[in-house]
Amino acid sequence: MILFDALRRRLRPLVYLTTLSPLPNPKCMLFFSTDPESFTISYLTHSCGFSPDAALKASRRLRLHSPHKPDAVISFFRSHGFSPSQISRVLTRAPDLITCNPTLRLLPKFDFLSSKGASPEDIILIVTKSPRILRYSLRNYITPSFHLLRTFCHSDRKVLSVLLACPNFIGDYRVSSNINTLQLAGVTPSAIRYLLSTRPSVLCSDLKNVIQEVNQLGFDPSKVSFTVALLAKRAISKPLWDAKVDAFKRWGWSEDEVFAAFKNQPSVMLRSMEKLNAVLGFWVGRLGWDHSALVASPTLFAYSLEKRVIPRALVVQHLMSKGLLKKGASLVTPFSMLDEAFLQKYVKCFKEETSTLLELYRGKGTC
Image (tube, rainbow, N blue to C red; front, side, top):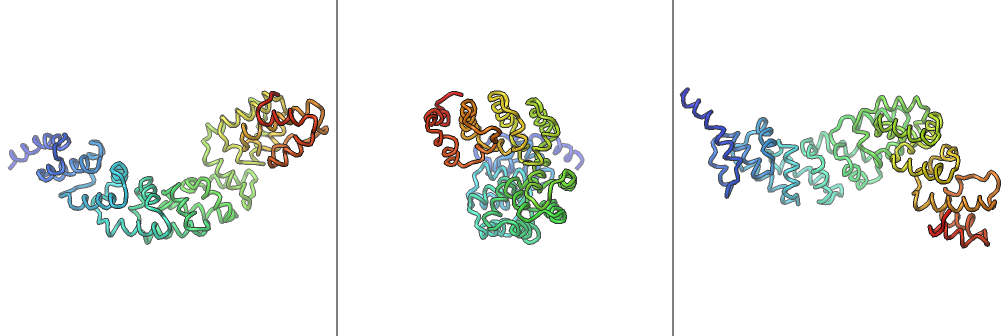
């Protein structure tokens, strides 16, 4: 018996290598292995699309003795429209599903999502992005999580939009804890809804310290600006935050002015570095205008540079050069108006300059 065990241990690597080699009909060959580990590795590699390393890793926690159960799972996913690569992705990230009863464990969750209006494509996307949703109990996790989101979203479709953006909501204990902390801090349902509609993944992180920080900065929890500031503080890493502050400083801003702009419009820090530098470079560098207008109205960073800021700025600059604007006129007002109102007030009312102003506005003139 001792000699037999020793011989089997020596031959085992050869069996393992053989199961990983390309075979004319690999699925048929699976039945010839009496070693559960070798069978598991071979099945995961040939039938589930696992890499050899992933199959070996999964085999340490998973043992397959026949293809019956895993074949049923794969067949279930195929019948619901999953591609081979999507099935492989799901099973690689949640290998324990391979041995489940799909009728008992998977189908009720698919039916629940479908009953809420999820299309087959929606379900495929949610499950592929976060296979662990299939691990959770429908009664204890999925249904309560859906109902929690439903209290803030106006429809099942909007809840599904949140789940499509962040399927990890299901089963993440931090979500309900964060929502409870936000409510205790005085944050309104509409403000929480804003977070859910813009960056729901933020609620899947530890927010306690960030909520305290935003409170200390003086933001009013009853206003949406509180959650915008919360989002900015949580979503932007400190190195990136510091880089954005430095970008403002390069164009003459003080740290107090950066904070003032952030306090006025916290979304300014959510703009990309490219957008910040482009607006600052055009406003201060090209036009030579004082940056104080941007500090007072950081909403200007939200507008399209090409479609709104540049054409309107060129019109305003021309009017200023001709002395056609009132002394001390606001530089901010022209950019906040609707298109037709802007044309009426800053283009069409100056009859002798209208053609030139229209050329500037339409991008055909030069400043």
